Length: 282
Image (cartoon, rainbow, N blue to C red; front, top):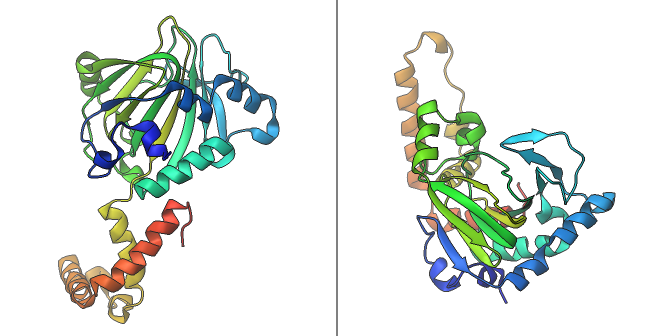
C-alpha cells in the first residue's frame, strides 16, 4: 500500500492538484499507529541512539526546559526530524516524497489532556497531520500571507499584528480530530490546537514544496554557464543610474532565456527535483 493511500481517501484525485482548503480524511488508526505510537516516543527518549534531531517540550506556545518525557502532565513533547532517524517514518517519508514529487519531513507531537502546544502559526509547507492517538481540537484560519516562502515568510519572522491575532482567535473555524483521521492543511493557513480530556499524539508530514521560485533558483545556477551574465558591471558604478544597470541586466537575461531549450532545461530541472526529493542539493 502506498503511503498516500494511508493518508487520503482518493490518492488519484489528490495528485491532480493540491486542495486549496483544509480537508479531513477518514483513515485507519491501526495503520497510522504502525508508523509511530507513544511507546515509540518512550523508546526514543530512553535510548540516546534513537534520539530525534530536535527533542523538547512546548507549553502554551513557548519552549520549556523540562526534561523530555512522553508522559509529561502539562507540556507537549516535540520530536522533530524523525524522517531522518526513526525507520518507519523515514521509510514512509521517502515513499511519500516519491509519490508527491516533493521532499517530505516528519515530526511527532504528543500532548497531555487539557493542554496546548504551539499558539497560532502558519507553515511554509503543506501539512498532512495524522491523528494516531486520542483527540485534538484545531482552530483554522485562512492565510495572512498567501503562499508563504520559508526564506522570507516564516511566521517566526513575520508574526502577527495585534489586530490579526485578535481576528484569528475570533474567526478561526474549529475541528476536532480523533484517532484515524488525517487533516490536510495548505501552507499559509493559520492553525493552533489543544486537547480536552484525552491525551493526543499526531504525526505531521510536512510537504516541503518545490515552487516556481525554486525553478528560478535552479535557472540562476544554470545562468552561470552564460558568459554575458557573468560579465562584470562597468566601473564608476556608484555614479551610474541604477535604472540603466537594471535595464541592461534584464535585457541580457531576456536574451539568454530566449536561447534556452525547454527540453534541455527540463532534464536539468528533473535531475534537481529528484535530488531534492532525496534530500540532496548540488
